[in-house]
Length: 57
Image (cartoon, rainbow, N blue to C red):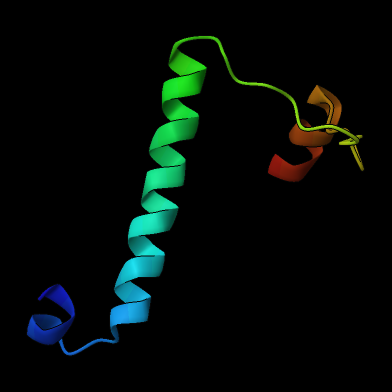
């Protein structure tokens, strides 16, 4: 119904709804302190306070 009204593909609407739902689930997990770190997820880089100051100059 939304896709027909806005003249966009149904798949695009479903994709947007799925992404929005995933975001809401993550926010809910964060709020309830149940957010888990993904396995094998090592940081690629680390931004420090000094780095941030240099970016603003």
